[in-house]
Image 1 (cartoon, rainbow, N blue to C red):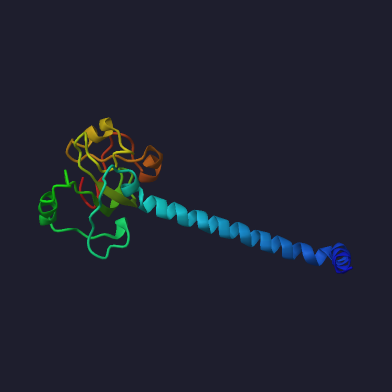
Image 2: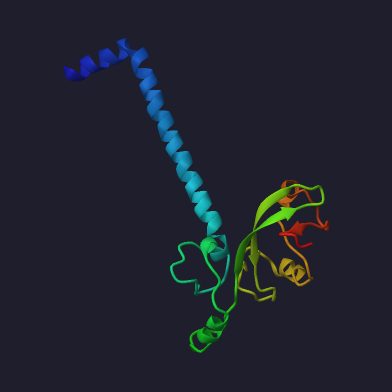
Amino acid sequence: MAVALARKTLVHEWRRFLPAVMSVGFSGVLIIVQGALLLGIVGTNALPVTQSRADLWIGFPGTQSADLGRSIDAGAAAELLVDPRIARVEPLLLGSGDWRGPRGGGVSVTLIGIDTRPDGLGLAEAMPRSERALLTEPATVLVDAADLDKLGTAIGAAAEINGQR
């Protein structure tokens, strides 16, 4: 009896019911979009870790995220190599910079410094040996081809990062 009455009320009062259902549905869509944005940001920040072949990461004490880390004393590498379970130590440098292309204007960029040897561990999954070899040339950077327009530059063009050409 109660279900039949509720059904009749919904059919009769659909103009009141429809906006409420649409509002709840739209709220659900917004929650899904926010979750996707969060996962995208976390995935981007984790890229240097997930795309490397390192088995162990050492960071500054209390570091919460790879992109928020501070420098480690250079003597830490020597201390690590004393342990027979550690075969090699390789630095990975993360920072931010101000990119100035030939057309002017500035863009904030993330800088990732890696070991350029062919068997380097940093970004090994994302960067083939041929691209890694390009970085052995002084004053060379690699950028994502999708970002060339945003950076206001082209392949082979000169640019400035933090005032350095």
